[in-house]
Length: 484
Image (cartoon, rainbow, N blue to C red; front, side, top):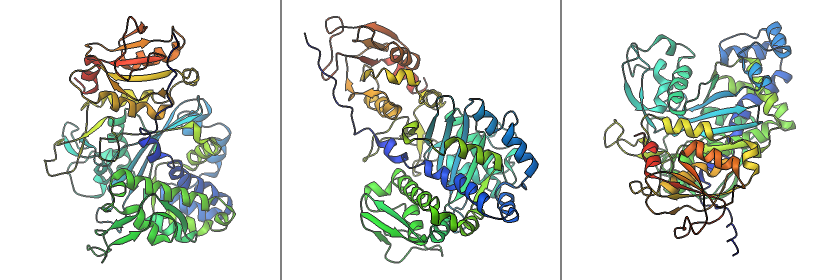
């Protein structure tokens, strides 16, 4: 009997990949420009830049020593010795925004020098978490995660713990809260003011950006606590934007087009603009505009990185291929896109507040997922056909959520389908053991047992494949998914 041939890999689940595909530009637009100006400006001018953005003067001797043999625990040391590095990227509104310190763009970056790959994980601003930034730490402040950075700079809570005060306090507070959600310990952070878009774009003479749909926002804010009369309007397609136009496209929240009104649509536009900035800043003309770019960046960056940190990341990643970057996002189901580990609801802020809740309130499932995203290259090389099917009787759509989660990882996935009810999770191996590494990876993540399957002893459900590996998601995994 001939086996059915594997179907083409799905495309409709690639939402998180599309949303984050241009995110490396966010790193390059900050770190790469620091390297550019280091090579083109006077020592005094660059020292002023480093002092303004990091709070410390350049130590020339120390930087030379670090370049030769970096100190243990530094980013340069970790990259040289094959240890993972975690960086938190934050985008905030800035002085011309009514909430200047809210970090509406949040991304966790994991650099893995052993596999020569990077994970970019987007965390939505509306994710609600129980924050413990006060003294004593037993005090809990339930709030959206984008509020963590503003704690040292406002009076929104009292009794802020000392480590979350001062120039770097906002970054450390954000690291603490995003770390709780992701399970990552961050080495450094970079916070970039959104107004840098405008200044940088003008310094470069404008940028070219393409929109997938029209963008019409009749509720766009002006600079006087009101709204722009008549709104802002941009046509679908590619266009040349000056600084103010780029800022409008980046900041718009309330477009009438569904594709543009979501947080995810807004993130994509910001990333596209950053990519356009990177493209211009790294060409020959960009080098000539280094002084203007430095002025723009100096006013809009806060970081605890040293010059050695910046250079180490740049040197490691300057030739990194796009195929080495795994892009994921924590999402909830919406009309325009499938979700994964989050859901809309009331997580403690009241029923009239837009908020996202983790399906697992302990964040354990998110930790496990993000720790499993960078799948070993030998496992991926097996190219095992994998399908997730839902055997849970209590969690409709679990197969689709899991498929969305693992779609960016490089696994060869088929469309998810339903299955007969199963109390326990099983990995059905219809391949006769051809994909041992993939089977082991799936078992480590989902639990259950690997079963040598045939269409006779494991009859397929409607739409289920009978080749490769089929993960039957049982009630036991459904409970773990929800932290129970």
